[in-house]
Amino acid sequence: MHPEGFPTVLGHEAAGTVESVGPGVTEFQPGDKVIPIFLCQCRECRFCKSPKTNQCELKIMASVESRFTCKGKRVLQFMGTSTFSEYTVVHQSAVAKIDPAAPLDKVCLLGCGICTGYGAAVNTAKVEPGSTCAVFGLGAVGLAAVMGCKDAGAKRIIAVDINSEKAEKAKAFGATDLVNPKDHNIPINQVLVEMTNGGVDYSLECVGKVEVMCSALESCIKGWGVSVIVGWTDVYSITVKPLNLLCGRTWKGCMFGGKLFPLGVVFSYES
Image 1 (cartoon, rainbow, N blue to C red):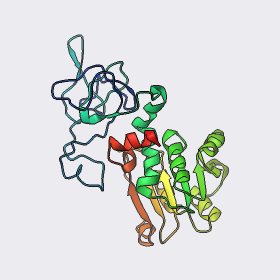
Image 2 (image 1 turned 60 degrees about the vertical axis):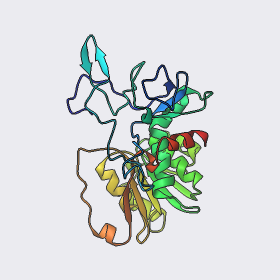
Image 3 (image 1 turned 180 degrees about the vertical axis):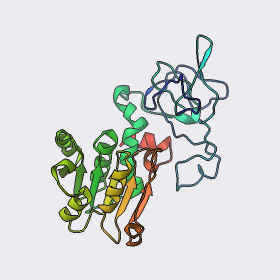
């Protein structure tokens, strides 16, 4: 959120058509189908030149300068994209060009949810064939993570959610099991450890709740288990026992699928 708060145009997922371009724009022209990207790269800083991250040191879209006005008054932007609007203004490095035939009402999900969840499994966790995975949270991000685990060749994918009605949808995306924490009188991490003879190889937290992040870590097997924090929160701090990491588990964070963009968005669409 912009440090000044409101009024602001929210939204960070979309797909649309280029209406016009400003001076110096060479990569796009009116009529191009594009997906706005809230985590774009300047392509020049040390972060952008590193294959290890998709962060940008310059944060070119984090400017306090607004691109919106209403009746002569400034309206603030959100995550550099402000997609809850018929029109928006973005930097040319903050859009990915896609196939002109792409259905905009579907590919808009690539602007965050699909790339975030799928990439967390494939790029950050690096799920291996024959492995066992657990995905916490079955919203758009979690379902995309399930799909990523499946495409990576996971043998068993345990979907975890407090809403059992999501079971069929999760299975359609590749889940082999659905576990509802409300159905058990022991912590969910213990349930998963018992189900998998010691813990899962990979866990992905797609909720944004610190208690779930810790449960996801503790559901991983000792020695080589990898847990990835995908859900967003900046409100609370995490407290974890050092032994949960000293025993060989790895705890990682992932933003927007851990892939350089806009190429990552284009690759996801083509896939």
